[in-house]
Every structure is written in structure tokens, then in C-alpha cells.
Length: 371
Image (cartoon, rainbow, N blue to C red; front, side):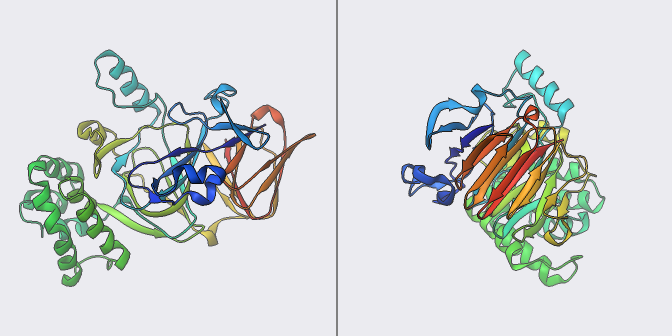
């Protein structure tokens, strides 16, 4: 077993001091600035420091475990503004793009691995996830002057054509963004949508237009569906499902990959054609509501991992990699005769060879377990 701290990512979309409850003694060093993600894993973009005698060391978990031994990456995420409209590759596409970029460039991926993820809401969490019904998307897009052909494509159920038509007009991104809030409200007032938009949903459109006034990704958001996750609710996103997290505090578990192909809402590189090539237009997002979970388990169909939410104690018997993160209060993890104590914002990594683990917590812990 290894006791680890998180690796902090101060991305500009983060919440100012949003990760302070999980940073412990490191909170002061990051005080007063956006705090976006806290990583627990071996990924080279942010390997977790190993903790010895209550102090973080210069040694990381990646110095002890390989990707194959620790195939899960977990993050505490704090979003104050929309993240990029993005999609993640499956194993086949990731390997092909990785090989291609080493032959001819440009650098698109961070690693050669598939990325699939679960987001567990710790607080109410707003997100654009998956595809909005094409008729509803068309109702909004047709009210944006200059996008009539894209709206027509949506009415014909051609999402990929509509996306291409929108991004081809990126020189008019600011014009479209300024129109979006009124277009959304007009579609709502017309009463022709299959479901009424929530206040949070309308606010998400307004925030995207305000935060990214010259970004073509704003005009893509009506194509995405919207959800507000209550605390304890989760959503699983298989590779290929588009999404843009909007605001909230959550806990993410994913395959150990940082591969992101962006379509907009970002200052980072955008690779539209590569993203379009891996978009999945048929697979829905999987929602796991608190009331539907069994004894705190979150087990998405087809996922390479599952989650166990632990409020008091649990035994983790799987002969696989397990990562136990202290979300509220502290937790104690025991394997055979060894016991490690993790404070809030720390985690314990348990290898497949180490046998059953017993977990006790004074608050709440989440175990991410590979299959």
C-alpha cells in the first residue's frame, strides 16, 4: 500500500479556493487562486506525491507503480465556469492517433490510452452531457441568424453535418454567441421543445456566452443535453460521448489517461476533425442516481472500474487495483498487518497482489476499483 496526496491543477476554470478542504497543509500555497483538479494516480501529467510521516515527499506513486499496476486516475474537481466541449478516444482510436502523431504530428494526445470516466457529484453539479434530441437542438439553432443550414441539418437528424456547418463559421463565433441567450429563451417561450429548460440550463448557456464571447463552442452547446446532478448522483461517459462540465464540485474516476479532444470553449488547441472522427452519436450517457445505487456501489455497464461509496466501513475483496480517497474526514485502510491512515484529501493505493482491504472512515471515503 501507498499513502499519497493529490497533485493540484490550477486551471483558470477552477473555483477560487475550491479544493481547500482537500489540500490540508498545502491549502495556503494555493490560496486565493482557481483550484480546478486534485489528481490521484500515476499519470505523468500529475503523478501523486507519496506521503511519509505526514509529509509529502519528492517520490511519487509513479515511482512505485506502473500504468498496468495502477490503471485508474481519480480527481476531485471544482468547476466555476464551463470546461471545454470535449470528447475522449476509445482504445483503438487512442493508439492510432498516438502512433500517427509520432510519425507526422501534431501532438494531439497526452498518452496512448482510452479514456472513460465517472463523475460523482459531491455538491449539485451542472453539466452538458450527451446529445440533446435533434429537434430541440434545431429549435434553438434556427433562432441564431446565420445558422439556418445547420438547423436544417439537425431537422434532418444529421448532427455531424450540423457540427461541421457551425465550426466552418468560426469567423462569426462572436456574432453567434451574442445571439445564443435570446435564442434559448425564444425556443423556451415558443413551447415547442420536448421538455422545458431549467433555470440552471438557461444560466449555463448565458455563462458560456459570457465567458467565451468569441468561441465557436458556444454555438455547439445547444446540441448537447443538460443535467443537474444532485449530491450522490453520478454519470458515466464512455469514450466518444461529448460533454462540457459547467459548474460544481465532483469526484471523477477514469482510466489513467489525460486524452481530451476539444471542439470549443477553450483557449487550448482544438482539433475539430479528430474530435468529429471519434464522436459517438448512438451511445447514451449512463446516469446512476443515489436511489438506484446498491449499498453505495456505482457500477457502470462496460466500464473498466466501479466505485464503492463508504460512509462507515467496508471490505474490498477484489483481487485488483484499488484506490481509496478520503472525501470527508479521515479513513483507515488495513491490509493484512499493515494499516495506513489518510486524512481528508489523501488516498491509499492498494495493488492487486495485496489481498483484501478493510476500510473505516470517520466521514466518507470513495474506493475506485478496477475490474
